[in-house]
Image 1 (tube, rainbow, N blue to C red):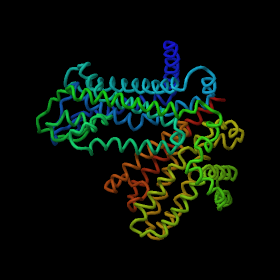
Image 2: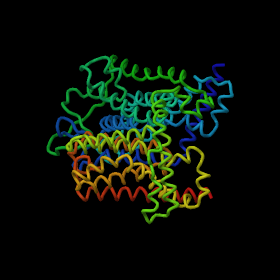
Image 3: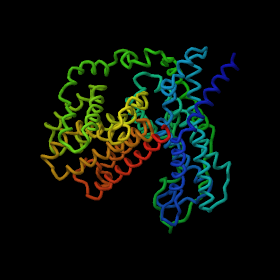
Image 4: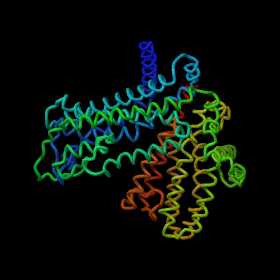
Length: 525
């Protein structure tokens, strides 16, 4: 019996891994990771180094130093991006109807949850191994010390596994719990990740809890390098200071227990996933309202449903532009669908309008306008890929103008929604600081273009959600110190070249999406 269960679990793990490696997005992700290894292990002749300690002393590029630094980088990268790459295992079985077949077998829900988590873990482990091999290759390219494979692998084994297990388990937990399986879960995970990254560092030095919660390995690395006053990755160094030879991690009994606890503890969350898993119940899968059991957001949506016909009259724009009326009307209908699917969004627009009217001018752009961009970005994340994910793309393609102009249709629709959300703050900016209007409009175009292009290319809203939240986090933490990050006019008028660069970037993304769409049409015809 136990052996039979293992065979079933192994079959699901194998199928998941093979499916993922047959997708072109997997190849893109691997190339990005390989490129990350190349750019991080900088050539010292450029004045930058992968590992800089004690102010501006550069560490020699030996196996310990490169292994330690790249292990930390991949741990952070997997923690931030890995979740969005793998958190579609259950939804893929729902869309392909394989879940109904699995539900009709004797396979228990617990087995399925464990198998999906194991599939996530194997996939992430293979990706991490590829990055490690790329980093080893960069050590040979820089040629400052001989390659010591075991020393290299040891750094990864002490840092990365807890992060892999945590992300693999959280992905299946979020897919199993109803209210975490959608866009709210994507945002909640991002916030949870940032809190989890900072929490151990906020605890007292030497705290056992900090060590047990150190899934990313930052506390472990900090204590291992304690004699050194500062450790930085991929920054400038002083070539006049003596080089430092990093010996690598040394594992004592205390830290061995801590790393083992951080490795095993996330597995307890599988119990939550097993209890919450719907086992592909048709009522659960088809109806979000029912599966949420009348949650707060659902009740708010129902209460606001009568407000939906509140003059979201995008179709009238067809008479005001030179765009094909059929395409513009279709985009207006698509934008209306976005509001119809979430009337709570309309309440957000009304709240932003009130806030834009009553707030002081100094708080308008860094406060209200920033919030408007945040809401708009999340609202349009899935607009360009929802037909393909819901299986209605064939019906859409029956309209020739939409089939041939799919990318432009989605761009117009996302722009309509983004402008509707940002209209009130933008109007107030036009009255109080008219010089910032071009920057704000360019920012709206950039966000709408990125959402459209990434949705078309990746066929999932998660790619845009991850990049948008990451960019937004960086912009907010920067506080306007870097003019290049002011893409939406959050800190006043941006320099013309900055605004132009974001418009160019948006245009490049749209052209790439147009090319991908054309290739798909040619392949599917």
